[in-house]
Image (cartoon, rainbow, N blue to C red):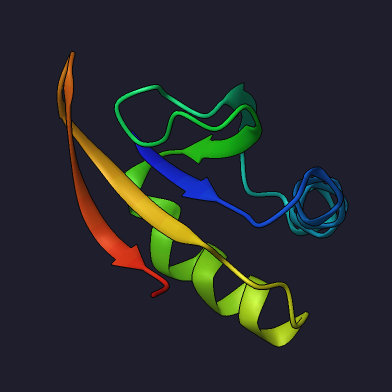
Length: 83
């Protein structure tokens, strides 16, 4: 599973509209506590769709705060994190 984290819930909602129109299968989930202690929502999807989603969000000028990949039930690795 891959998780995209955004700067605000508004960015998540904007991304969800764009993604739904594209046909990429996603779920809106709470940001996993292993990624951030902030309350908020994130978008999860299959790892196979990661690059396609990155391209789509870039084309729509939607900023991504971070992209994380789950490697075990409690462990995530960072694929991208905005400094």
